[in-house]
Length: 172
Image 1 (cartoon, rainbow, N blue to C red):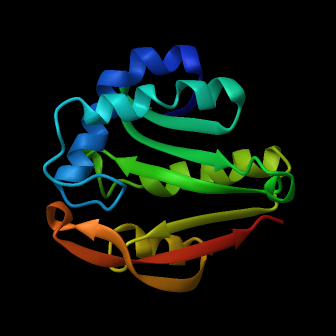
Image 2 (image 1 turned 135 degrees about the vertical axis):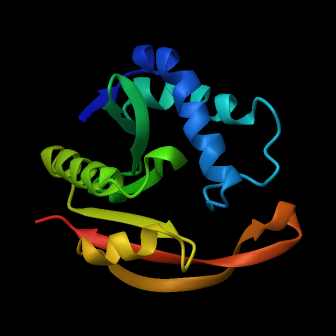
Image 3 (image 1 turned 180 degrees about the horizontal axis):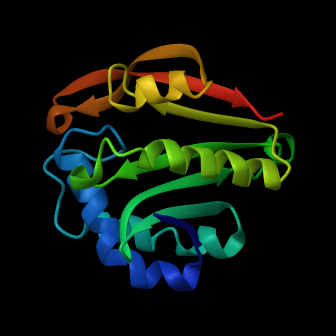
């Protein structure tokens, strides 16, 4: 397993694998900003849309490669306003459905936390749907739940709403 950072330039070559991971996670019900069924091209468009943020330094993306293939990804979305430059949001922590339960998410989360510390950040936040697979991982790795917002995300193709659970982790 190798964890590496993508640049705006290396993002292009990773698009097929990143798109496959995103689409696979959405198809399995992950609440990560997309509805099922996911329209053709939407996943790739999402990743392509991050190129500018990578160039500007407002987004950092890590990937996990196993046998040369990307099997997991996660990102830091950096606070851009003057009063938010000390924090970031962990986003799109995704593991390909065929690569789950192998410690990849835990390793990737630790790498994102280390990256944030190396950047001098002092606080990370994230959110997840209560009961999703990530919730036990966040609790086990020292993240503190800090509140649930009801009706936060659309589910079931947009016909219902679900809550989200926010977590935070101070970086010492």
